[in-house]
Image 1 (cartoon, helix red, strand yellow):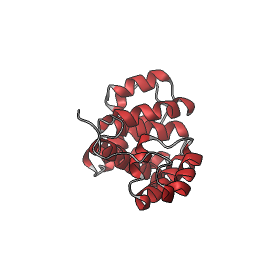
Image 2 (image 1 turned 90 degrees about the vertical axis):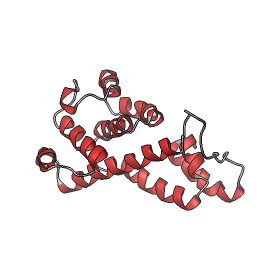
Image 3 (image 1 turned 60 degrees about the vertical axis):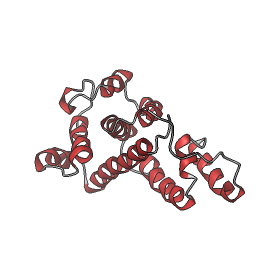
Image 4 (image 1 turned 120 degrees about the vertical axis):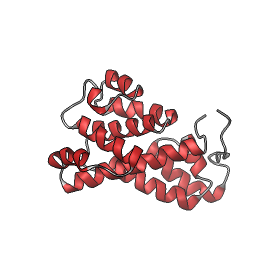
Length: 176
């Protein structure tokens, strides 16, 4: 694969971005290569940061479930940088390394060993939203039975948001 397509903004080199960089670093602990590319558009990075912070830190979804979705989307969209960036979060959220290793191989949702109740159904939802956009009733019904309206919104928003992230990373070759 060829080199990245957009030059990252080196933190500290654009005084007009100092406040924004400080906020990103405070929220994330650093300014990752993804955010360095996003800094090319202050308006986009501000909205991005607000949305992704809400999804990663303010929803009711268990961290393990959220990270399961993120890892699956990264695998489906061939976004290894995103996958690797979220392995530590998945481990911290209680996902066993064995499940992470299986997810790398992109098996069918019902073939992933070590999942907790309801997780295979969330993987099926993630697959449908990522691959086909339309979610068949047969895929949605088991998720609907397990999760309330707020959680359904959060599940769909997490899948949608991380499709955006992975597609952005792949299209602009961030992290190569």
